[in-house]
Image (cartoon, rainbow, N blue to C red; front, side, top):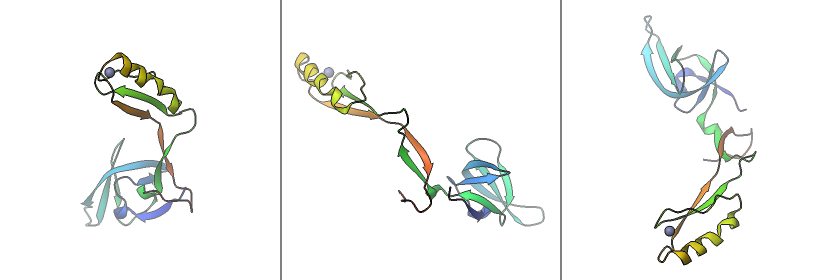
Length: 138
Ligand SMILES: [Zn+2]
């Protein structure tokens, strides 16, 4: 994992930051002043309590840009379906893209004018860190 250290004030929404050894995703940040006048950053997380840190503190960060969305391959094959746009009837879901081709022809033959179908592909995606030196996607 490509972990870096950033000043707290540079961390933003979507970045992952380690506080006390626990990695959390930042939802938003705010700034505040300590009573002594120093700048503080308040981290608001997707879950759990907010945290306050001195703006200049170096924190372990995995920047948002270092994460990618990839198709999950382990036990989560894409599911293919066709849906009639006229009556919303659907073929049986299948893991084979070619497994749905007979259904719309039969459906169209049995229901005059039902000749337009929506292709629905459901796949499972996973957020993963970029491999160091690997490709950067978006
Ligand atoms: Zn139909």
